[in-house]
Length: 259
Ligand SMILES: O=C(O)CCC(=O)C(=O)O
Ligand SMILES: [Fe+2]
Image (cartoon, rainbow, N blue to C red; front, side, top):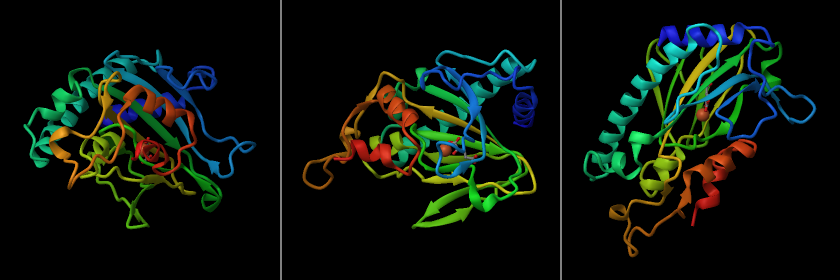
C-alpha cells in the first residue's frame, strides 16, 4: 500500500510532458490524466490532479514512472481479492448464497479502476473543493490516502470528517450495490475538501460488475407486494458513461434509474 502511494506521488511529481495529457479524450478512454482546476468553466475551484486507469479485466498502466506498471498490477490483484471477499460477506448479509453476487455480476471479469488524486495545498481552502459531493458508480471502492485527511462523508445531511488510519482501507459502497440490493445497502455520498498546509494524495480502487452486465435488483430481494423494485436495469457501461460525462453531483445518476 505504501509502495503504491509512493508510486502515485512519483507519477504526479513528473513534469507535465512526462505525465499523460489525455484531458480531451473520450470519457471511456482507459487512461486519463489531468487537472480539474479550470477557473473559466467551473463555478467552484476544483483543486485536484488525477490519474484514472482501467486495470481489469484488461490491465493498463501509464508508461512512467519506472515501476508503476509492476507495482500497480500487484496492487490491483490484491485489492480485487479483498473486494471480492467483502462482497461474499455482503451477499450473505442479504440472505443470499456467499457467491451469489460474485456470480451474478461476473466478478471474475469485474471492472476495476485505479484513481489516484492529488490535492496540493490551497491558499484559500474555503473557496475551493477537492472533489464535489458524489457517490461512486460501482459496488465497492477501497480508498487509502497519505497521512493527510480530507475526505468527508454525508451522514443524515451533515458532513462528517473521516480520520483515516495509516495502512487501512476505507470502503465506500457504490450505486450498483444499492441497485442490486434494492436499496438495502445505500451508496455513500462523499466529497474531498482541501487544506492550506499539506499535499494530500488519495488512491481509490473502484470495483464494479462486468461492464456488459445490465444490473437490476436481485429477484430474491424483490416481491411486488412488500418490496417492489426501486431501480430500472441499465447496462453498467452506459451508467459509467453517464456518470463520467456529467458533472459529479450527489446521487444524480442513480436518480436516473430510480423508479
Ligand atoms: O480523495 C478522496 O478521499 C475521495 C476520492 C473519491 O471519492 C474518488 O476518487 O471517487
Ligand atoms: Fe468517490
